[in-house]
Image 1: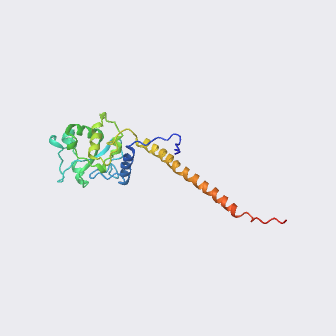
Image 2: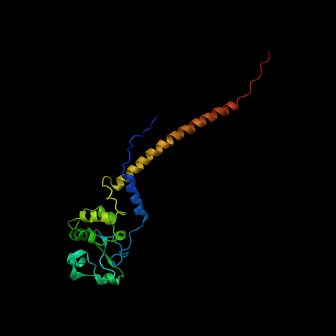
Image 3: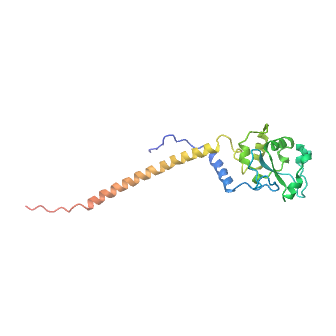
Length: 215
């Protein structure tokens, strides 16, 4: 059996289909959700504008009071910001959450543990955090690892970091083109053979009938 191999063809990695499926799932979910309670500093109330405020964290409980993040207290107590506490502004905005810094998120997780932080995955720019490494001099690895646990449907890195999404897309396009070539070439050859056969039959039918020779 003849096997046609196009130049430069590379097999797809096993993890690529799942990564692309999750990427399409993220796209299907649409734009980033509003962070309920965020102030007027962002006109659309979303955590995807400046380089650091990319995490939507729930800071108030169901009664509109500061929500405890484990035994060490609430967000403002843990971060030492009680003097600047803005919970009243969050209540005025009819919400319970706020866009917080990536570095603050990483420190909070390192302090109280991932299980004690309250994040809104649909309003957190997970992709931006995952491609970031340092913010405010703080290593973001704890934040990235926690997001992979809490927001698996939006995280691509929880599968593996072997391929960058852009590289995966490029390889998929290249591989797809090669596979199309493999499918089209045999079909084109078959059509060519049929056309030649049809032409030969047509010529045979159009030939003049033989007449008997007159002696």
